[in-house]
Structure formats: C-alpha cells, structure tokens
Image 1: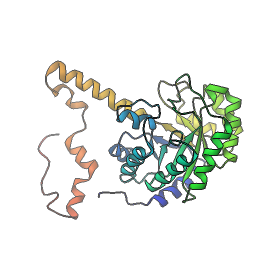
Image 2: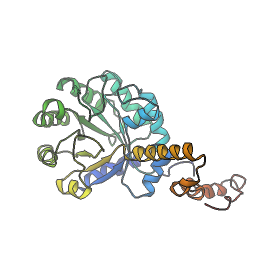
Image 3: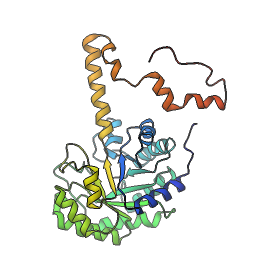
Image 4: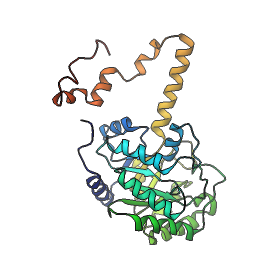
Length: 301
C-alpha cells in the first residue's frame, strides 16, 4: 500500500548482486510510475528511466532540454512504486563536472539503484541519430571522477555510456570505455553498436558489466536475450519500447474515436477497470481504513 516494501540501499545491493551473478538482467523502460509496477509484476529484473521518454513525456525532443531536478522528481515517483532496482539516464550530467556530481546525489536521494553518464557534448541528442559529437576523453573522465567522488552509497552504480562508436569508430569506443573504467565507472553502456560482431568485440575487450541497448528503429540489430546472454552481456535494455507501444495505441484509439464518435470498437484493447484496481491494490487500502475502500467496482469489465 502506498509504497514499495524495500529500501533504496537494499535495492542497490540486490542490483549489484544480480550483476555479479553472470546472468542477463532484462530491463524495460518505464513510461511512468504505474508502468514500473507492471514491469515488476511481469517478472523483469529491473526498470529503466529513459531520458528520451522523460523528454517526450514533457513534449520535448531528446536534446538536453530537461533538467536534473525534473528527472530526479520523476525518479522519486517511480522508485516509490516498485521493489525493482531502477537505473536512470543522466544524459551528460546536466552541466559541468560539479553539476554532474550534484546530479548523482539527487539521483541517490531519489531512491535509484544507479545512473549512466554519457560522453556526448551539450546539447546532446539521441544516441541513434547522425551528427553526434563527443567530448575529449579527458573531459569525460573528469565527469566520471566527479560523480564517483560525490557518491555516498558505494552500492550506487555508476555506468559510463560512450557514444564514440558512431563518431570515432569501434576501436576508439573500446579505448574510451577502458579509460572510463579506470576513472571509476562500475559498468559500461556502448551505444549504437552496429552488429553482433561489434557486441562480441566489446565484450572481449572490456572486463566490467556491459549493457546492450535494444532500442527499436536504431542503428544496431535487435538481438534476442539468449544471444546477448551467450555473448556475455549483463543487461539488456528496452528503453522506449513501452512508450512506443502506448503512444501507438493512443493514436489508434484517437483515430477511432474521431471517426466513429464512440470508443466502443476499441474496448477490447483497453485495460479494464477491474484490472486497473487490481494493479493499484485498492482492496489493500481497506486494511488501513475501511472508509477508503467500502465499495465494489461497477458491473462489467
């Protein structure tokens, strides 16, 4: 009722232990706090908060327009609803290294299990668009050292994302990843790898946990979980999948409603009222105060 039953510290320890287990952790991106609860119920290992989804939810493109406090506020709302560890996209840290350090502490306070920080320049852009630029390696290592030094909970995961593959090539991206590990990164997110062979090469060259980004309509192949597990990856990320599914359904529903003047034709595609109440746990609130839940749902779905 109201909140998760676990603590941020406990979820961080669990996330670290799961990463150390050697198995592949499956991590869909949440659209909102409610969807994080559905991710947990569906049996996934962790949830993710995508910067692209957070920006789109505000009606903004993914070009660095959101702020660290906006992102932290959504994170706190989400971590309240799920017992899963939650990883967040912290873009470039929202400013200079000292801003990145503050960002890390905001995300710790928001109950997250970790963040990833990328090596793009500001303003950043989606990692699967052309025209990206990356900062010099030394500048990114300064960002990483700042967030590592600012960390208060040693179990909070600091992941380095490199966008260098599309800018400087695979070998340079691998070299950067190694430098980022030396600067204190616990894990690495190689963005926009172009083939299964590149995923394999990255795994062979970098010794810390690796994240594979299986985003739709991107530059790389959509590898299945079994393939990624065989390649030795530790996390498979589906960052925007739920958002795209949800918004596609919204558009379809709006077209039907506009054309037919009623939603009757799409009722079978909707989550029912009773299912909504089940997910929200209405009945559990009665144990706290019977006056809160002293009614039954209306008849029908």
